[in-house]
Length: 138
Image (cartoon, rainbow, N blue to C red; front, side, top):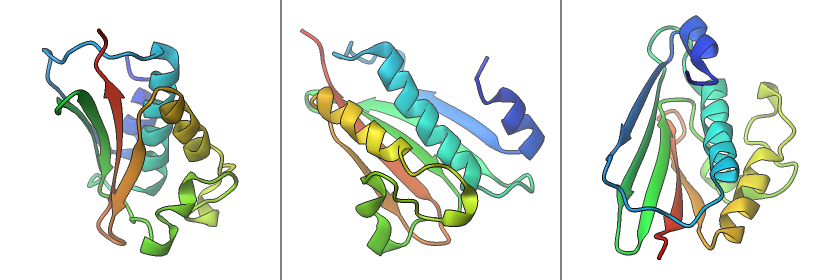
């Protein structure tokens, strides 16, 4: 069961998971990558509509020598001038939504420690997609 099951149900937000089952194994600490995904989903839950139209999608696909994971939402989006800054400590795209401003900075550190990258594509009023990459093992 998703750690967000109750929150998703109560807020009427739909979570879709689109992960190809034949993805190659990656070099990663399961707990740390799970934390990154949970952080991205938790952030998305703060910003998506709570009127039954909110959507979050987690997907993963194989690219050249990496797995590309994305967490997309149809929330409020992030202003363009904040899209790089939000990965810095204590920076929040929207102060009214709570949080410490550390989650994305920690996520970036975890991805860097794994040799991967993390970034966002967002349009204000049209949602956000956070991406990260992990290298294949072996």
